[in-house]
Length: 282
Image 1 (tube, rainbow, N blue to C red):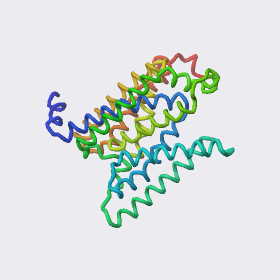
Image 2 (cartoon, rainbow, N blue to C red):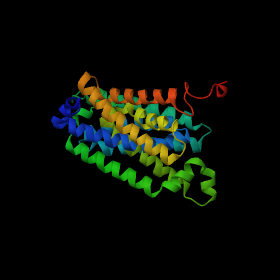
Image 3 (cartoon, rainbow, N blue to C red):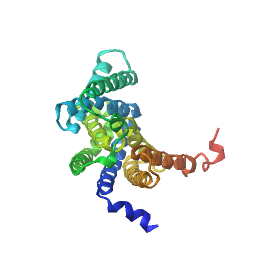
Image 4 (cartoon, helix red, strand yellow):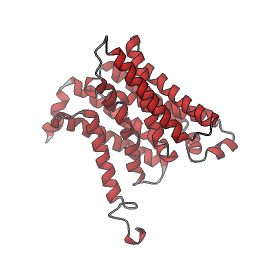
């Protein structure tokens, strides 16, 4: 049993991958908890798809992919807010429009770039965590530190804004700045997760660990803490599953996270489908 855990660690690529997986599992659960509470899961999906054009342009221009992805993600969130505030279109529709448009633009740009450069589209869509470099580890660690520090410093303000935006505004909090800051955190988290799970699967780490924790505990700080533990465990387990069963790492991580959610959905002491009192089921 010990050999099953130790053998993969002999390889440097697994060491790098596990570090990134742990960092991504941590920050995705923390930031995703805000999306979960605000019922804006689709926003995480929209931002994750919005980064694709930025990735393609950054690759073509020869600049850091994280920079291109972050700028593209922020542009996507800005357009969503602009459509929502300047038209009668609701937020979910605006997110759907931006998601599909940016994703289509990204695929188109990658296809055009592929004529002169060989790009594996699957790496952008589903991640390539086994191919991360120490530079990627450094960039992911920097993003993780920024995200955790901001959440720690602005926890009370973000908590108030998340649960009661109108009340936060009446209380004098800078709600526009808080909203922009939260969108920035989500974009940074998505960018950090790209190498691990890719554009398509990033929502699995953003939402699933937090949703699992939400079924087990009832306070946001506890949801964050437990969700982070579940996210980290899902990432590590997915990496080992990928190594021993020879399956793609990103999908393996997402499936493990889904497995933990299924267990909580069935056996949660308060909300479990199989454990809640029969009188509560109507």
